[in-house]
Length: 338
Image 1 (tube, helix red, strand yellow):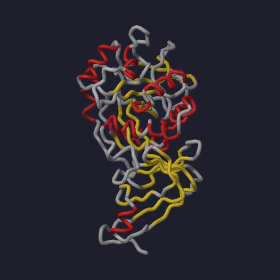
Image 2 (image 1 turned 90 degrees about the vertical axis):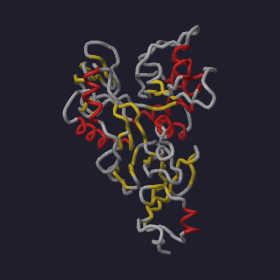
Image 3 (image 1 turned 90 degrees about the horizontal axis):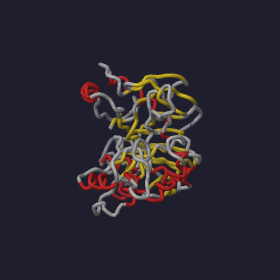
Image 4 (image 1 turned 30 degrees about the horizontal axis):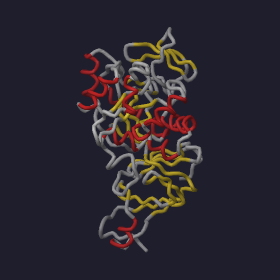
């Protein structure tokens, strides 16, 4: 039966033979897309009397919402904190490279820099939709627990990479970490916290503790720096020079971690392995939760009807096979036939 063109002339794409992440569970269900949005098949069948114009056999792969990185400082030789007249070019390069890691949206972030850097760089960063050109573009603290709770009461919602660059946990004053189980959080208010699950910044035991204490607030971030995707050696990072040794990024001449060179798909895989959580939890920590932090969960981070058709196809080991933005394939792994 041909699709009904009385509603829209846009083609309807049906992704079949797949397991999709929906309502917090992987479900054996087809995914329908039209005009860059997730389509409700019941309305298509019964209201429009329509069907698919194109079917895509996903070969039993997983379909999850596209990953969203809320803290990425650069990558592939690009440093978002370096004042330039063409900041947008660097952001575009990183956006394109991130597609191979399942990232469909990201927030370019700046490492701690002089005020003049913020004034020069931030005005050049623009919100942009994703596509073939790349993913869409969407602080450290030494506060004690009472200060952190007061901040939450005044609107704070997001902790920058938990455990890193903050006061250590202490049984008399757990510091910001204590927010995960605090009884002083206003009713209906969710505190989210970033976690760098690269196997270096955070011990697996710490990942497990955080996840068990407050799983719905955990947001995977890369905190990636300019050296992500580059060879070992020394590279500029804002006002510093960092040195890459294996999977470690240090402030040059020290053993102080300067950021990460992890990719989001790597973080999802390590988080799953380190915590023993469900596949659904690992995937939502990189999609739904960051969308909730940004207040865009009505259109990003889910596969609900009406949401943007930004999604990633994965094998059972959570290796990215293909990335889609607005229902269009923007990247695929070599030999992948999708």
